[in-house]
Image 1 (cartoon, rainbow, N blue to C red):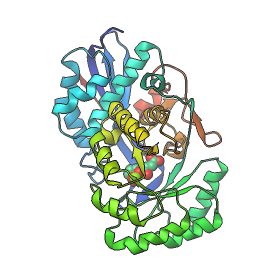
Image 2 (cartoon, rainbow, N blue to C red):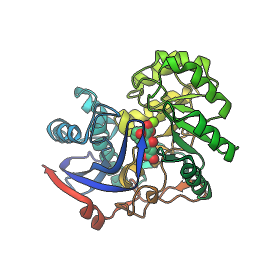
Image 3 (cartoon, rainbow, N blue to C red):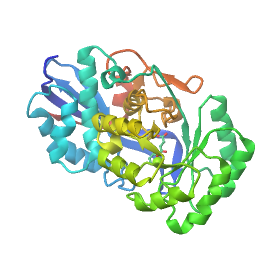
Length: 371
Ligand SMILES: O=C(O)CCC(=O)C1=CC=C[C@@H](O)[C@@H]1C(=O)O
Ligand SMILES: [Mg+2]
């Protein structure tokens, strides 16, 4: 393959309204403010990526504004400084910039999409995916009543989702989960705490073992490994780390200390596809199941998540639900649909979904062209 010469990058700033508010213990989202990143080569081909940072730095240190600043002032110049022989080079080129993984992942993902399109292969094939369809779960934000939550779960099980992920926090955990387990005795259920607990809650968290949960996601401090290892020794339920894992090195630390038994991989959180693949391979070596976490993405980000979820160690359903679960209309065509709890991936080159330009331009609030 000839090298990729990046001629232009366009940052399409987007604002899309979520169909229903998404509440966690750290905030409620009504809309998503993000960038669709378009990387254009000198032959005029385009690859697409999507930033996943929120407007405030509550999930990681990044925000929509820091993504914009770091992409425009540091990462795009690095991308354009010399030809790219293979997308795996991009994360190494970006290493001179500390952290800012979501900014890096959006640009690196667009280069991966561009590369796969130039090669005439799907992104899944380009990264070594082995599956044509992926199992899908659904994440449900905190609801105003248990009745509403139970009705929502019933709807999702009717739609065939393979598991439900429920948000928990102190005062909104055991009772609610007991109600859910009573109504759905065999449903695969996981809980995401977004760091709402500390080791002082150990005895309380041990009560969750009675519920036969698939996992408890990130119960403790967002950057902790030691206390999670202490907690995991006391729990039968597997701990899954999300916010703690930003790099391959973090994954190595977590596995060495026994901080978790499952890892959620999000390309945006770890800096892109190349790092995600390295973490995936490490987890495969240590028999740690992984799944693809979600960031309330629009269709481009969702397409990248689906491609990564075709790697073999992604053995658990991901937060890659249908477009219609989030958006009245998505910016890709066709939209992502879920049948029988699975998404069947498109075979077309690259991310496999086309941009719906009418809708992208309808939801676009700004456009920055960087030559
Ligand atoms: O994208 C989805 O469907 C799930 C999103 C989701 O659960 C999360 C997104 C971002 C931060 C958290 O609230 C939570 C997570 O921790 O995985
Ligand atoms: Mg999480």
